[in-house]
Length: 99
Image (cartoon, rainbow, N blue to C red):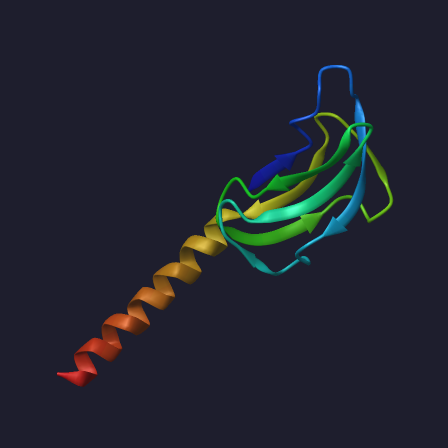
């Protein structure tokens, strides 16, 4: 499991408010996807997925205040790897069927 934390805030900022989640628990995510948008004193920031996998658990709802360093959500990277391997196996089977 990969933990995604609240980071990227200015040094003088200690918290942000969850504005929008772009994915729900159980959704597949790719590394680099914008997971959540947060409101800070300086504006709006997005937190990206640090790994590909399945969004396993979301710890805060929209509108909630989150402290710097807190875990926002977890990504099950093992599930994402297994899903990719299944897709690759299906592609290989299709290639063999076409021959």
